[in-house]
Length: 411
Ligand SMILES: *[C@@H]1O[C@H](CO)[C@@H](O)[C@H](O)[C@H]1NC(C)=O
Ligand SMILES: *[C@@H]1O[C@H](CO)[C@@H](O)[C@H](O)[C@H]1NC(C)=O
Ligand SMILES: *[C@@H]1O[C@H](CO)[C@@H](O)[C@H](O)[C@H]1NC(C)=O
Image 1 (tube, protein in one colour):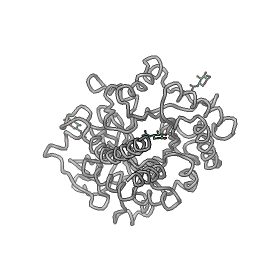
Image 2 (tube, helix red, strand yellow):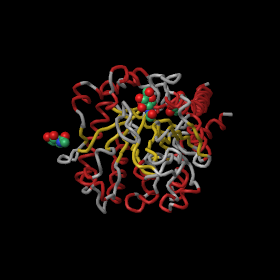
Image 3 (cartoon, protein in one colour):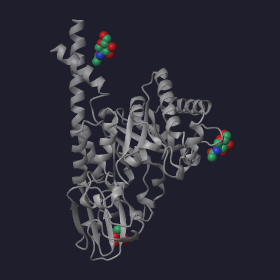
Image 4 (cartoon, helix red, strand yellow):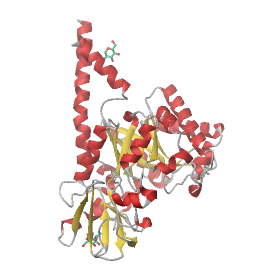
């Protein structure tokens, strides 16, 4: 029996931990919502997540070090310190910091990663930060290396890999088990310009794959934004043939990534559209723009689940299911939303299990129904958390086995 226990432990180490992680994202800007709706650090449901990520810090363009994007909150209002204190409330919880993001762009990363000396500056500042706040790692959200529209350069593909490799090496020397995580797209057309897929997977501890935002109002046709597979209409619009979760994940796997390092990202928000003709409301229908902004997220074409879950209970809305993409959508008059719900998230959980992936991350906590307007608070986060709970049981067995082992050694 002791032998069996030992073998189990070895297998789990080899697989970078056999428990599936569930990484939750916290966004600092959600605190600006009015009154009761303001999402605060105290609202983070630390019991439901294995990790929580603080979004975002940035890269300083003159010093090439880690930079605060909103020192008034991060420092003056003690945002980082209060976030770090979540570990006292939830001792099992791991904390990460995300650097970059869409608004940050790629230019500052590109400039920093260009020379070894600058990369050292950056990595040194990250080490200092992680020591200071006792976080467990960093997520690099460089969108996207090698993308000229976003301030990229040809050499980004190489320098991104150097950055990750050097950072992982220095983290190992610190012996803190800090993680280097990279956030990457699933759109296979972005790979050639920016990603040495196999090497990145080898050097980084985890690869967070953006499994959403694959469609939106900018495409001028109504669709769900995180389909699991190609639908018939994707094959007629040739550029969308491979732009789906399944083909994207297979591409990372097929290029030499260990499945346990791949973490699938899911969205707790929807993408909304304005239909051209209210009678033409099927997937692929012609749209003439973005749906109206929501009261909290305030961005056309983008709605947190908390901003429309109540609407969907009314008869005015028709709810449908994409059988191939495995995602829900809903419409009323000229408004059309493609989103995720409990059912589609279960499909994604099963996909992650079938493919032995390392886990899931969700963007973001403040998009879920965190005030419980439509039932129990955090309905979507809870579904994802159940998956994490199931895998935790395995961990507990392993822990008991090793304890037994040591006890029998002593006796
Ligand atoms: C970058 O760092 C310099 C020196 O510490 C600082 O003066 C400047 O404000 C920083 N830039 C930004 C954009 O924060
Ligand atoms: C949902 O309902 C609220 C309250 O009636 C309304 O203001 C809002 O526009 C609706 N949202 C959508 C996406 O239709
Ligand atoms: C078991 O013993 C080993 C060394 O004998 C030690 O490193 C390890 O932490 C112990 N594990 C537990 C769960 O007590």
